[in-house]
Length: 104
Image 1 (cartoon, rainbow, N blue to C red):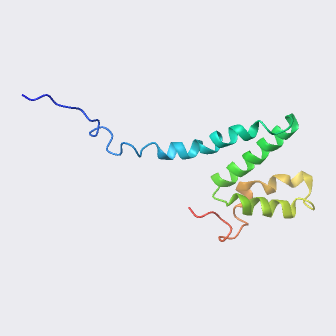
Image 2: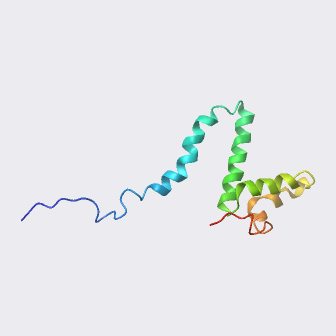
Image 3: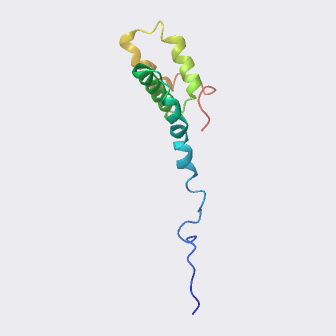
């Protein structure tokens, strides 16, 4: 009986491409790592963290981050502070037109 060589193809038919999604998801972390060194101060680091959180949350809610930030920044000046939660991405998603929502 000839020896059988295990290539792993039986267990992983998409070998070589199965890691692409995970690598793409972690790419901003790797690229930003160097940028985080230049936040300038603790306050700059907190500001960057807030912006990254807003951008990530907008993406998770199916919004284009640039359109979402443009929408919020154009309204935040006259928006009452006690209703600031109305500008969060999951509440704004229904107000933005389909043209401003990210293509899925």
